[in-house]
Length: 331
Image 1: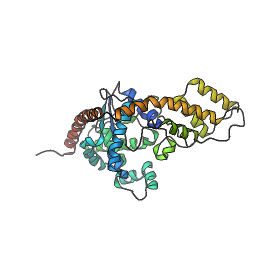
Image 2: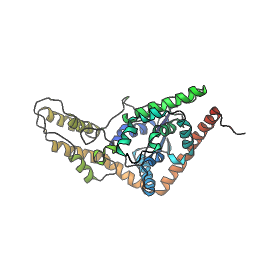
Image 3: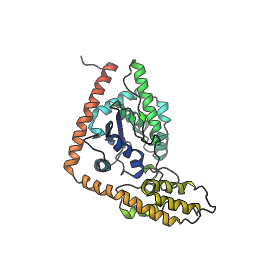
Image 4: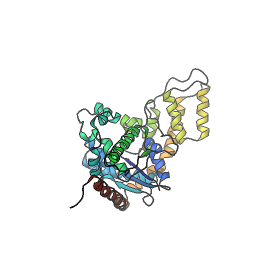
C-alpha cells in the first residue's frame, strides 16, 4: 500500500483553496492508501507566534480537518511536535541541503521581501523540514498545491543525495499527487492570485467564517465594467468567479451566468450574490461540525494521542535505519 503524507501550518483556518487543493484528495485517498496527516506547528515558529495562539490554532486545524472528513481510524492524524524524530531527521537532512539552492527557493525570497526584520534560519531551511516531514514515513505521494512543487523537488534532491552518499536506495522519491492528475489552483477574490492566506484574509473564504463575512468578501470580489462584445473571453477576475462557481454551484446556475456573460446581459451583483449563497450553503455543514469537534476535549485528546503513537512507530523505525546507515551506532 502506498504511503501518503500531508500537513498544514496552524496559522489560520482551512479555506476553500486548502480544501479543493489538497484536503479533499487526502480524505478520498485515506480509503486506499496508508495516510499520515499532521499539523505543522514547528513550521509556524518561523514567524514567532504567540504561545497561546499557537496552541489554540493547532486545536482549530485539527477540528477543521476532522470535520472535512479525515478519519483517525483510517489515517494517522498527529501534531508535528509530538514526533521528536522529525527534528532529528531535519538536522541530518540539513547536511544534504546546499545554501545556494535554499536561497533560490521562491518561497524564501518571498518571505525575505515580506518580513525583512525576521529572516531566520528556519525560513531558509523550511524546505528541509518539509522534506523530513515527508520522508520520515518514506512517503511516495504528497497532495500539494502548485506553490509547494518546488519544495517537493528539493525534497527529492535531498534524499537522492543521501542515498547516493551512502550507496543505498533507502528513501523513495516523493511525488506530487492529485486525483485530477493536475494540481488544483483555487482562485482568490483579488482577481489575480490563487486563494491563499499569504495574499491576505480578504482573498480567502474559510469554513470557519460566518455567513455575513462570507457574503461581504464575495461582494467585494474584483470585477470589471462588464463585457461589450458578445461571446468574448472573460478577463482573469471574472474567470476566477466562474471557477469558484464551478466548485460550489450547480450546473444550471453556472450555465445561466455564462450565457449572460456571452450575450452581455450579465449583472455582476447578481452573480456575486448567487455565488455567496452557494458558498454559504457549501461551508455551513462544515462549520457546524468544526464547532462540535473543537469543544470536544476528549475527542481531541484521544485523536492526538493515538495519532502520535502511530506516527512515532513509523518515525522511530526510519530513524533507526538512518542512524545505522550514516554510522551513528551504540557501543
